[in-house]
Image (tube, rainbow, N blue to C red; front, side, top):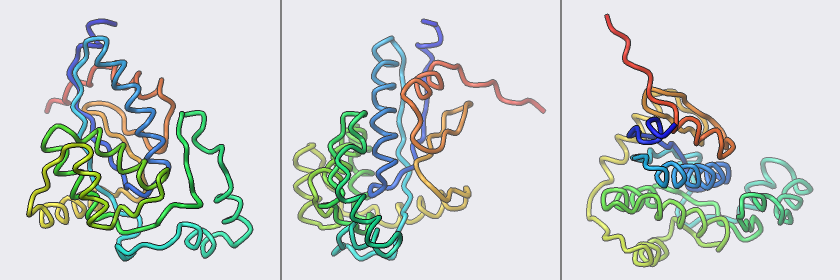
Length: 211
């Protein structure tokens, strides 16, 4: 067990920052990674971008209105008033305040943060800004404040690389998130239990197939 726990792992976490299931998955995965690292393991977490609604303008719109169009008003109101979803994971989610928005600029900020070793903290803060604080994470001034809060220095470029990365993820056939890819191991879709993520981290990568 200790030998497995010290096996360096590389994990690709495919997510969109307006996806509540990605937030729950990240919360559980982050706890598993902490336990893995605390036991002597090394884990590199690489965030890969996906956009659920790339056509949505950065000005945003109430999430309630999006749910109303998709599910009808009664269901939308039930979702907006649900204060228990995410509670078992220690999350306080406020669907009534959430602003559904374009996440391109938020993914750019996450990429900047990842390049400075702050990706995990930035991803959590962006999710919390959207799903708890009711902030528009497509708004440049909001993103600037969040970057300052985490200590991320914004770059002037990166848009071309991000578009290429979004295309690369689409070419993999990804059509839903979250998706967590372990090097030489499983691809876990949806928000899995913390124990499942920890087991995947603890399991050494399969050797490459020869021939």
